[in-house]
Image (cartoon, rainbow over all chains, first blue to last red):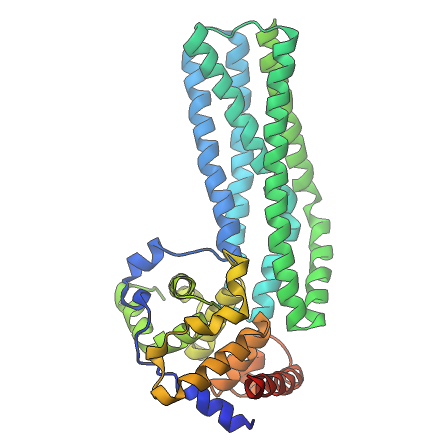
Length: 243
Length: 162
């Protein structure tokens, strides 16, 4: 089949015919009903988690009110708020950075490479920040439960302590694994597209990732410290409950 | 530059054909087409302030539309099966009813291509020259040329074999 024949068939499609309901939509309707691209999925992951964290923040503030006068719990809540503030700041900055790099007006190679480089660099931050939310919801949630049911932090047996800690660990680990799997899926998706573009595109992205990763150690260390802090916080609350 | 309601309506009115064709090529049913169409419109509006006058608007628009389509995560992988793709094309959009079959065959053949090859053939069918295609996709002209020869050959073979 000749080139002209292919183009003739293509030109039989009538541009003016409105085949989609979406064509009649206004700007506001389109914005409110948009669906997910890799960029939107990754953005939504962080945005939804920020909502979850704000719920955790409210719960911590409620605990401050409920347990006013109980120094151990006050210390835990203040520590939790500090931890939450730091994680949220990192997450917010990551979100802003992502908005800057995810520009679909660039060439396809640049656009896909930018997203891939960003995800590979920030995957650990995504995973840890989102997993940390579990602790930030679980601990204040547990404290609110104790307050509503017992009016105080209920002393626990060693077995209860083990059960509560295990639940927290399972929740955190499963959130971490879920985010890791989602990010892995998106990375594979981008790998395929870049390798379809040409071999050099993928190599270009890999080189850029290696170079930029060297600059990311500080923030990674910071996030790991924050994660450890979160677990220490959990231990303190449960330990004080046992005591 | 801001994408206000008037600008948005103008862009949509003038370029709906391009957006619609991209949406058709990268999806296989009406619902996904609508989703992708909306997503492209949203991205055009959102990124409008990044458009620089030195680039042709249509080049920029193709970039946004294709990049959005390529990075679209499939909701349901089973739906992407090329066998079902051509059945979902909106036939009302074909100028001549006698040509429906040929258009169907072309879409079925294109549906077998990977996402990048779909972008290449779409740009070529839309009369973009090699330089423009290279600019939109960010690859070399020689790469465009080599890939297009292969894609056109595959396309012709598939259409003739259907």
